[in-house]
Amino acid sequence: MALVNPRRRARECAVQAIYSWQISRNDLADVESSFMAEQDMKGVDTKYFRELLHGVAKNTAELDDKMTPYLTERTVDELGQVELAVLRIALYELMKRHDVPYKVVINEAIDLTKTFGAEDSHKFVNGVLDKVAPTIRTR
Image (cartoon, rainbow, N blue to C red; front, side, top):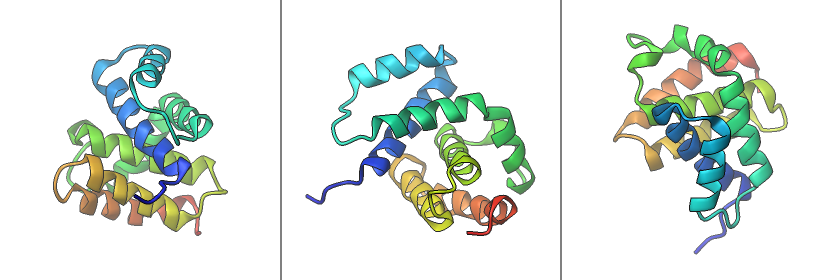
């Protein structure tokens, strides 16, 4: 089995933890501590996981505002929770983590949606990111 990149594992865990936080509306610290206690965090860049989790939670309104014009005929409230979590993570990385290449952010988001999202939802996520990403940065 191929070794999975620690940042990819961090993103996978972040999608799951953010999903849980979005659904439960529990305190973020409680979601984080129970997630880390219950999940296999082996091979995870935990610092990056925490940054994504807290960064998304702290910037939710800004992230949602960024994506809203590109959701075509849907609102943020109509998105699936997985797609919403993935888009929030991708937008956070595009806006705050300039060390992560633009194409890496989009490819990771597509892969995360293929892993955790509904069938073909990766096409929607890709479409939104293709439109919004150039408004945030060019590469």
